[in-house]
Length: 156
Ligand code: ZN
View 1: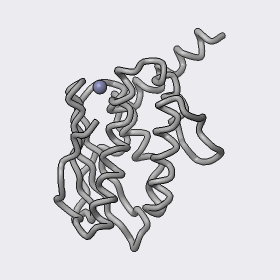
View 2 (view 1 turned 60 degrees about the vertical axis):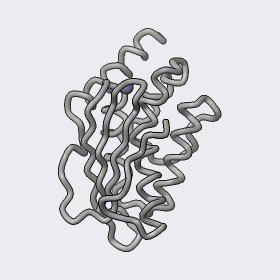
View 3 (view 1 turned 120 degrees about the vertical axis):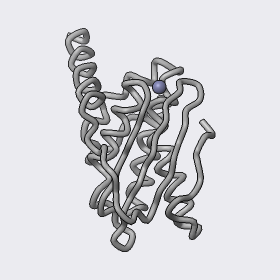
């Protein structure tokens, strides 16, 4: 049974990899941040348009391995309509799941639970974290008043 389960998970990850959900440009983005995972070569460009502190639109363009692209795609599916504070809480929960600290709490995490197995592959954790680290870094910059066009995140 666990074999079938992992195959199903793999199929979901590959589906996101082949058809990334949030792959689009966002006009006049309030938050714009690029991220890199040097250990794998994954690169991501993330843009968000806000309405107040609510994420109105997110665009995720990721070039890299299946895990990094799938994680960015899943991110784009769940952050729209949420406040930046909620988004940061989700990111923290995802990080705890990926590092094996704790399971995802109750809530709307889309397909993200399929990435839980990544915790067993330390090299892949950074791949799955890239989109989330870039997102949180971008929000942090925005909260500091450094919004669109700000920095590149490489500290993975
Ligand atoms: Zn990777």
